[in-house]
Length: 40
Image 1 (cartoon, helix red, strand yellow):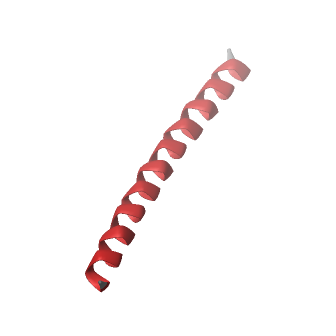
Image 2 (cartoon, helix red, strand yellow):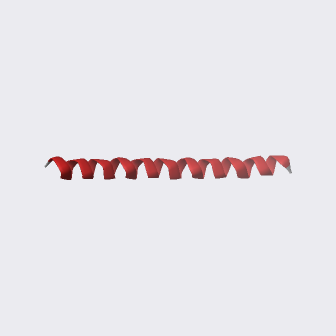
């Protein structure tokens, strides 16, 4: 029972990490676009 819970937690952790990665990439892209628009 404990093993199953830790596996679910590991899956959740991986999902959170993926979402964080996506958010980071999106933030970098938006920042680049804003800066490019500002300085061009």
